[in-house]
Image (cartoon, rainbow, N blue to C red; front, side, top):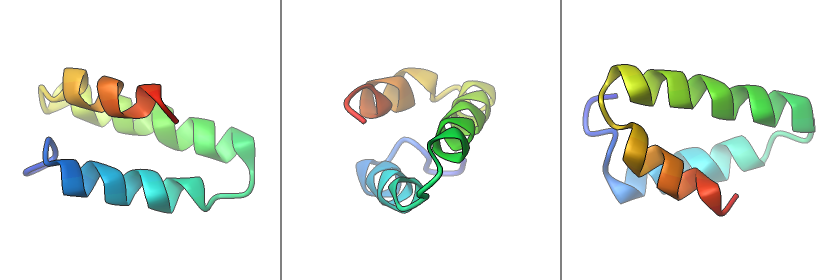
Length: 53
């Protein structure tokens, strides 16, 4: 999660995760990224970014 609060990184991740056709896997990816964001103390930025997805 180095530089994990950068908008370009978050948007790239959202775009890549959005290509997963299985909704359960997409949800799992979202949950995993939030765990990592919390550990890296970047949870508020990721929560805000994922709110619209």
